[in-house]
Length: 335
Image 1 (tube, rainbow, N blue to C red):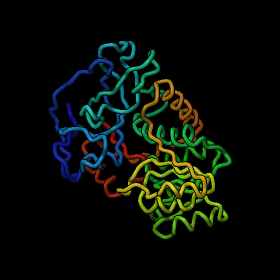
Image 2: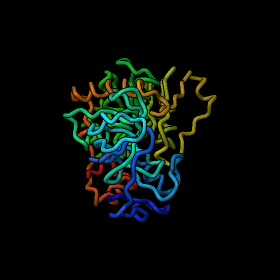
Image 3: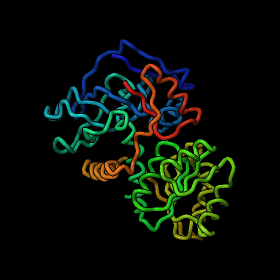
Image 4: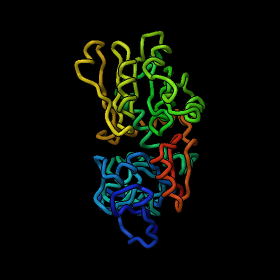
């Protein structure tokens, strides 16, 4: 079995090693083994190599938090009827069985063949490449915008890091729900990408001040929602452009630091701070989100096909691509 493995901390392209004779393994209780079709990569895979991510596994580990493929083995307590089912979902990367391998592990606790807590069914018409980029970005966007912020067609949403995987998902999902979307990206190529996925307006942060441009686009009122996976100065600028009774959704810190927001500042404009992460929900709740997302996908409103795809042997180039900030959409490695 082949797998990419991280055996020490450092720059990803320096510490990733291809092991072509990895030891075979079997799923434990409540787990399933997946023959991987494709694996998704993201900024957390870079941060783990730096030992700068809260969920970094112990060394050595296999990267990739999400994957898609076919169930080829089940652990105790899992129905044998699931064998052969194509699924997507989060890998057990913290147990050192991430998706960047011929086979990986996923959690399969749930009720019945179609309601797995860790895995979700892949429609027949969805490719493995699309499926590998569908879970984390779109579940994150759904939890943030639909469950936490309760977005409506009356909202104007400002999306930071809009050309990245979660930002791209947020732009598309918000448009599917009828909202106006202002995307923030860095440089003309990424700005053009944001236009191509449906953003109503795009702010090039390298050429424009985020606060000033947002206020100009909203006639001085500001936006009713902010989706912030970036933090840092960009997050601070977006907060200053949040409208009265607006909602500021905290997703992450791609800039390397969280947005600096003092709690008393929220009082003056009655701004709500919302954290959003697709963890801690029941199998039924995750499945409900998945079904809603699939409805939008079937209508062509979520275009997961804009993944940046790399071959398995070229995975080191893929992670270097992410580390260099060249991402447009989701980075996926195909096997």
